[in-house]
Length: 375
Ligand SMILES: *Cc1c(COP(=O)(O)O)cnc(C)c1O
Image (cartoon, rainbow, N blue to C red):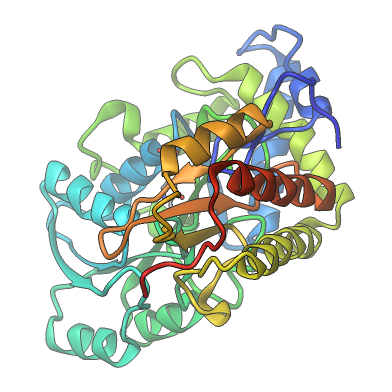
């Protein structure tokens, strides 16, 4: 895998290391209202819907900005002003969705579990039974705060049994973890260009059930975040309403070619799983402990508890790894001091083994003999 020699490998949850082919796709300028760009945009949208197995039922609506813009646009468009959401929270991204609903003035209740604990399915069932005002369940597939895999298929089944709509933040999962609209019923799912599909940052998108979206005119609280208007305008003339991130889209189209060549979602899942295995096994051999047991760990980003060895200092560790060409990620947990290592992006066995080697050398340099945490 190649990148220019001076770029560090990004072991982060995004933006990620991208391939030379993806970067090179940006070395042009496109007219946003020109047929060439319109065709590329259309192809991108069709491919995203196909990845979700949703060609018959859903449409893809893109929006400028980072992933949060797509989340905010989707919640505001899909939840009517008199709707009510049940937000399942076990990390920062669930918390962020509750905050978005607050800004948008939508009614909501939350169900919160610790960052290493998936939501209780019986409890979701009970809340939906008791509170018939709840129109939508809002959930995170892989909560990137910890890397935990939430049981999205079961959450979808319970939500559908109660006849409510499901909105999934699949930002750090889509393209790598399985998500098929025919098997996991959802009204909306959001992701972005710069996570498991390995594009560059600048565009979010939502895959929306056509039957649900059709009833959403006038819901949105912000003109630029109105996905109903974005959809109908793009259906009418193939164009974005406001300046599209042309270079991001053309890079994304190239990234999707590579995604297909790798065997689509199963191929990407296999590479990320292998990346994750190398890091988890290698770090455990050095005494480090993961926050999560293996059966809850998504092969996206791994949280390690902070070592107690007094010789270990995270900033020193981070800086030394950076000098050796690997950028890791600080922790975001409230339950325990931690740091994270991502396994997504244009990275494979060579880079993961290289990262482990850099970690070993750095620990030795710091005089850290064991990565074990306090508990
Ligand atoms: C990355 C991410 C987002 C969006 O974050 P941005 O910084 O706006 O791109 C939302 N949800 C999850 C679970 C994520 O991993």
